Each structure stands twice: as C-alpha cells, then as structure tokens.
Length: 597
Image (cartoon, rainbow, N blue to C red; front, side):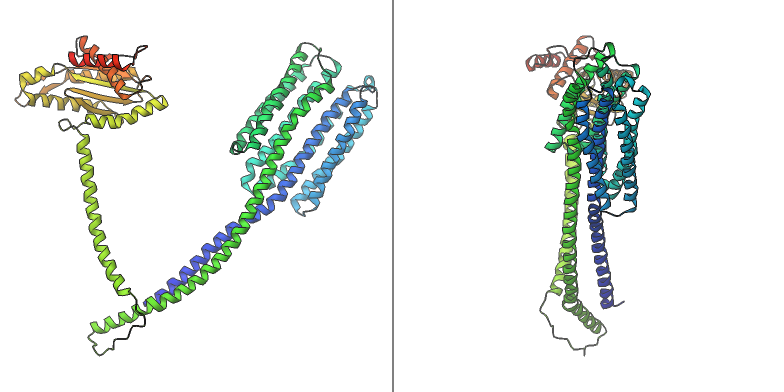
C-alpha cells in the first residue's frame, strides 16, 4: 500500500474516531441535560405530595383531639380544625394542578390516587362531624375507633402517590436516591411524631392511665422515631459540610427529639401509673407541635437542595453541550486544514524523496533532481532523531547501571558484614517506622535483646575466627525463628535485636524462649573440628507508652541485665513498672547491663 493511500485511510479513521468521541461526549451530556430537565418537575411534584402528607398528619391530630372532647369543650378544637382542613384541601389542589400541567401516563395513576384521597377525606370528615355533633357520652366507642382508623386509611390511600413520585424521581436521576429517601424519612418522622401525640390525647382528655395497648403503641413509635432520625442522619452524611443541614439536624436532635420527646416521655411515665397529668391536651399540643416544625423544615431543605443541584447540573450540561459542539466544529475544521498542510508540506516531499532514492538505487542517474518547493528541516529532523535515539539508549543504559550500583551500595550499607543481618543503623531506620505505627495506633509490639553468654571466653579460648563462626550461627538460628515482618539486627558485638510487630509481651517471651532452646540445643562446629555449646540470655519487653525506640531498647537492656544477673541462659520478660521511663534512670540501668555483660 502506498504511503499516500495509507495516509488517506489513517486520516479518515482519525476523523471518524474524533467524530465518534465527540458524539459520545455530546450524547452523555445530553443524557445529563435531559435527566435534569425531567427530574426538576418531578421533584417539585414530590415536594407537593410530601406537603399533602404533612397537612393530613396535622388534620389527623386535630381530628383525634376533637373526637376526644365533649361538645362544650370541643368548640376551640373545631375552630382550629377549620383552617387545618383548608390547608389540606389547598395542598391537594396544588398537587392536582401540578399533575395537570404535565401529561404523562404514570402521572395519571398518581392523579387517580389523589382523587381517591379527596373522596376518602370527604367521607372521613363527614363521619367525624356527625360524631363530634353528639355528646361524648352518646358516642359509640367503636364508631370513634372506626372514624380514627378512617383518617389513617386516608393517608394509606395517598401513600402510593408519594411512592410513585419518589420512584420516578430516582429513576430520572440516580444521584437523588439519598435525597428522596431522606425527604420521605423526614415526612415519616413527622408522621410518627404526630401519632405519638394522638396516642396520648385520649388518656389526657379522660384523665386516665394508659391502657396496655397505648403503652405498647407509644413505646413502638418512640423507637421508630429514634430509628428514623438515625437513618436520616446517615443518609445526609454527605451534607454535613452545609451549615443549613447541620443546623436543621441539630434542631431536630435538641428540640424535636430532645425536648419534645422528653415532654411526651414524661406524660407517658405519668400515664403508666396514674392519670394525674399536669397539662391539658391543648397545652401538650401547644408545647409539642412547634418543636416539630424543624422536621418539615429539614424536608424542605432537602428538596430545595435537590432542585438547586438539578438546575445547576442542567445549566452545566447545557453550557457544556454548546461548548462541546462549538469546539468539535472548530477542531474538525482545524483537523481538515492540518491534514491538507501535512499532505503538502510533509507527505509529498517524502514521496518525492523516496522516488529519488529509488531511482538512485536503480542507477537511474539521468533522473532530474527536483528543486525543493519549501525550505524545511525534514531531513535534519530525521538525522537528529537518530542521534537522540542513540544518546537516549546510552543514557538509559547508564541510568540502569547507576540504579543497580545504588541498590547494591544501599544493601551493603544496611547489612552487617559478618552475619548478613541488618546493622544497627538500618535497624533504627526501619524500626522507627514500626515503633511509630505501634505508638500511633496503640498496636502490640515486642522487642527482644539477646546476648551470647560468655562470648569473650570463646574468643579467648578458640580465637576471634571461632567467635565469628558462633555469631554467624546464632544469626542463622535467629533468622529461622522470625517472621517476614520481624526485624532482626546485630546490635553490636555479641548482641542481637529482634523486633516483633503485633506481638504482646507473653508471645514475645515465647519466641525468645524458643530461640534460647534452639541455641542451647545446637552444637557449634568450629573449623578446627571442635564442637562447643553456647547459650544466650534474653531480655523481652513490650511497647507500653514508650516515647522513643531508644527507651524501649533501654528497658530491654534492663531485662537482659536481670537475665544475666539471674544466671544467664534464660529469658526475662519485664513489663514496664509504674514511674519507669525517665531517661536518667533508664540510662543507668543500660550502663549496668553493659558492665555486667
């Protein structure tokens, strides 16, 4: 395939790829724009539906209070019920108007539930008014219970409308899942709060103790209120940085569920033993209901925030769409222009140069050398690239060698030349990290300081070379007893340090005891064929509020001193004593340990 045709195919593929990517971006942003456009009216309708629920809850509470009052005592309640009913009707009309403004099959189902709610509400009100017109003594208790249940049924009839609007809002934009759930939970919390008041209304009016069923109902509703608030607080954890949400949650916690719930709880406690309540139903409602205002306020904040977020996302998506389309057209024009320039300034000269080299290779010397149309640096660029490539290869090779050398030097500087273990400097460098983890997170960490017993006698009797063999063998045995995460180092002379992360004092003592037994049971074969027995003493300590790794080592040295003072070839695990840790006394013990060894 010729270079010219290959360039044409590649150009076409690149253009198609660019158009596909631009189309994908436009399609994605269009989806965001479309979803946000659809979700805003749905959320508004959901807000209206939640307001209807709130009004029905208020009407239910006032209605229950009316049914518990006698004729002469119920006039004030009737006066209060009239505007409450007006508010419920107005909320239903607002929702109906919003549903009529948008034609949709699923909205027809919601409208049907709203109409059924209106019918059920009208029937309930008629029955309530007939009962309230009778003297309390003539009211059939069963009929009163039925009327009260009809109010709850009215809310149950309306519940599918709220559920349908919530489902559509979430489907239109999954990012609103938590917000929709939180708004519904806030409405449910307000409903539960109203039911708690209704449960206490009848006993307070009659000045009688609570029945067993009323006690059970109140306790269950109280638990539901706490659970609903906990879930709401969890759902809104992403809004904790917003002052309005934080203040609303704090108000609910302090007033609605704090002071308000305390008020009802005190009445509940009184009602369990007697009917001597210290306030009337009106006083209870006047004291409790205002504290509930924070719950619908939180709900309104959630809905307002969702609408604001949807509007911002809609605006961002629209602006991004316009910018993307404009940039895509500009980039497409630039891309076409660039292809033409490359074809004329790069591809055509390369093709001409190729034809010339082919002619020269075939010894067609009569081929005329064309005069360059442009004075450019294509040839110089290619030669420079070859030079740079050669230099780069040489540089990479040198860098690799340098890194290998640095790694070798690092390993050499961290390793004890005799035993192959970490040296003292490397132990402190790595041990400080493990000590810092234990200190910060209060993790378990044990430290074992080991000293070969009578090592000087080995050097004196068998020579320093034999002593070196003993140290290497002890290092080998110690390495078998440690885990991969443990740090094993030669601390100096015949002393070794073993740091055990996530190991407590008793477990560290067990590790030291195992290693002590291994060393005691081992026959150390020297080069001259002599076999000797070696023992070691161990000091074991565990991290316990030590401020530095050096202090921990000092305590290990003190434990080692006790092991040597106790006869050697033993393990002394020493917990931190009260008041221990001062640098002066610790250093004195360290010096005494060195002197006795």
